[in-house]
Length: 450
Image (tube, rainbow, N blue to C red; front, side, top):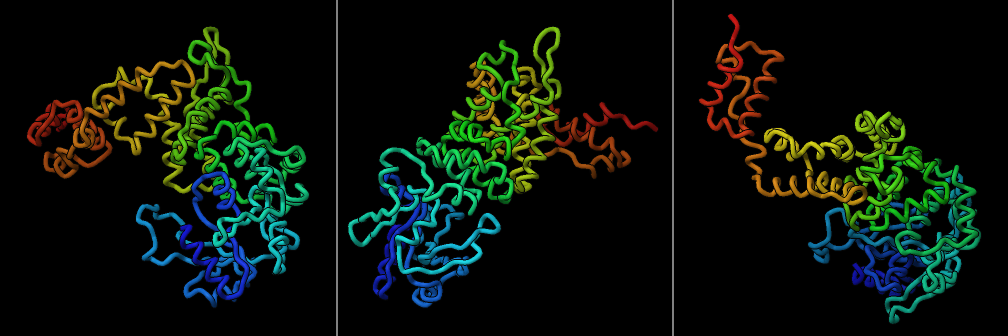
C-alpha cells in the first residue's frame, strides 16, 4: 500500500501538482507503527486527479475526495478481502459550515497545504509527509510536539471542530485510549459541553467507532473515558447503569457490575472479533434492572432473559447486521450455562458445544471467571471436552427423519419434534448407532396408540 501511495504522489508531482501523505498514516509512521492505510492530499482538483489516473471512483468528489484503486497485480494476497485496496486522494480545501454535523455545506479548493490541515480534527492527525524526500514531515499545527508529549488536541477551536462533525468527540476518546494520551483540557471541556449533540450522529457511525474502541486492545481505558466525558450515558445508557450495582461478594469479590465489566474489557485481546467484544460488554447488561437483595444474598433473578431483550434492542438501535446480532445475543443468552457444564448430560453438553462460534463463548467465560472469582476449572473442563470430541460426534448424521416416522405409522404433528429430538439425544449419548437401533428405540419409547 505504501509503494502504491508513493507512486500516486510521484505521478501527481510529475504533472506539476503538490502531493503529500496525510492523516493517520503520517501519525503512525512517526510513531514507528505500520499504517493500516494511506491517504494522499494534493492541490489537484478531483477532475484533474481523475484525468491523471486511469481508474478512479469519485466517492466524495463534491468534497474533493477521489479513490484510486490499487491494480490487481499489486494487491497482496495477505490482505483481508475487506481491506480497501485503494488510496483516498483529497484536494487541499477549506470547509464551509457543517449544517448536518458531518459534511461541509460547501468547500473551497486551495493551493495551500497549510490551509488544508486547519480543517482536520486533531493535531496528531494534521501532519503531512513527503515520501519522495526522506519522509520529511510538514507540521503546521504542532502535531509533532503533541505526539512527543502524548496529547490529543483539537486543531484551532475545539468546539468548532466538534460541531463540524460530532463523531470527533468519540474519536478523541478512542485515540486517547489507543495511544495512552491525555486529552488537552480545552478539548476535553468542549467534549463535555457538547455531549448531548452526539445523538445527532448516525447510529452506524457510533456503532463502528465504539466497535473500534472495543477491539483495538484498550477497551477499558476507552469506556472509562467515555464515562468521564459524559458520552457513555448518551450512547449506551444501559451500560452506564452498571455503576454502583453491587454483586454477591462470594462470587464477585472484585466489586460492582461496572468494575466487573471493565476488568473483562481490559482483558480483551487486540483484534478480538466485534461480536465477542460486544458480547463481553453486554453479558451482564440485564443485572441493573433485576437487582434485588434477598434474605440470603444479592440476586439477579432472570437477568439473562432480561439481558437478551436489552441486547436485542441495543443491536437493533445501532443497526447491527442480523448475523452479528444473533451471535452477540447468543453470547449473552448462554454465558451462565457454563455453571451447569459439569452436571450436563453428554447430549446436552454436545448440543451446547455446537453453538456457532463456540470459541467465543469459551473466551467470554474465561474473561468472566478471571474478572471475578478466578476459578477456571469449568473453562478447562469444557475446553478439554471440546478438543476431545470430533465435529462428527457433535453433529452426527441423523439416523431418522420425519418420513421414517410416517412409514412407521406415526401421524405428522408436534410429537415428531419430540421423537426426533429424543433419537438425537440418544445418538449423542452414544446409545444409538444405526438406523435399525433408532427404529426399535422409537417403537419402544413412543408406542403408537391405536
